[in-house]
Structures are given as C-alpha cells and as structure tokens.
Length: 100
Length: 88
Image 1 (tube, rainbow over the protein chains, first blue to last red):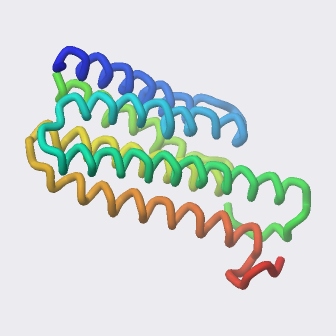
Image 2: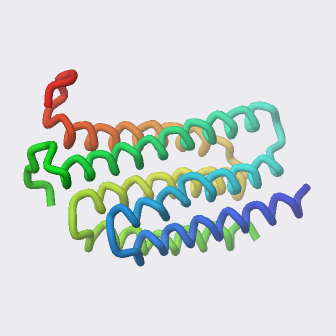
C-alpha cells in the first residue's frame, strides 16, 4: 500500500508542477484557464488518492474525502465564473471598470 | 520521499507568484490567487501526513472555503457590478 501511495503522490505532483508551470508559460487568459484546471482537478484527485493510501483512522479518511469533493467542486466553479466574467467583459455586455 | 514531493510542489509555486506579479490584466492575478490557494490546500494535506499531525486537515478546510468565496465574489462583482440580485 505504501508503494501505491508513493506512485500516486508522484503522479499528482507531476500534474501540479506542470499545471503551475503552464500558468506561467501560456500566452492568453483563456489558455491559462486550462493549466489551472489541470492543477485543480487531476493533481488534486491523484494527490488525495495517494494520501488515502497512508490514512490510518476512519476520521482521517472521511475528512480527506469531504475535502476532496469540496475543493473539486469549488475550484472548477471558480474557474468557470472567472472565464464567464472575462468573456462577458470582452463581448461588451458589462461595463468595464478599472481593475488592472 | 514525501518531503521531496512537498518541496517540489512548494518550489513550483514560484511560477504562480511570478504570474500574479506580472499578470497583464486583473483576471490573471485572480486566477493566480485561486491556483495558489489550491496548492496551499494540497501542501497542507501532504504536510499533515509528513509530520503526522492531523490538525492541518482542519486548516485546509478553512483555506478551501475562503478560497472559493474570495474568487466567486470577485467574479460576481465583475459581472453584476454590485451585489444586488439580478441587476446588471
């Protein structure tokens, strides 16, 4: 079980590092939403599955599962809301105020 | 081994900080803040198992909820320009 946990943690760390690097490297805001989504979904799932292999008691397992689903729903919803706000401002549907 | 993974993730956070500093628009900065918050949650959960203290998981809960509320509030404020329901 420890070997499986280490493998899953390494896979999750690969996704997280590549997502963070893509956030720095990509050109456009809408393109940058993709590596942020990779970090939020794939890296989170693999890291938490790897941590579940190390979990000892039932309380820790339940806490990890609740935290996984909370972050999975919350981060993707936040990415969608940001993309929608930027899209509506680019289309001229909302009045653009100074934010930069 | 688990400390190596922890250091690798923490070192890659410098890319996110660089994007938050040099972001051309404000949306890039909010996106960098959101990604930073998710990384902090993951780092806290790995740290709980690295030092064998499960109190860090409760801190991760608070970070997750605050990160979600912060990002969604700014996005909704940008769309509706105020917090009243349905008025653009």
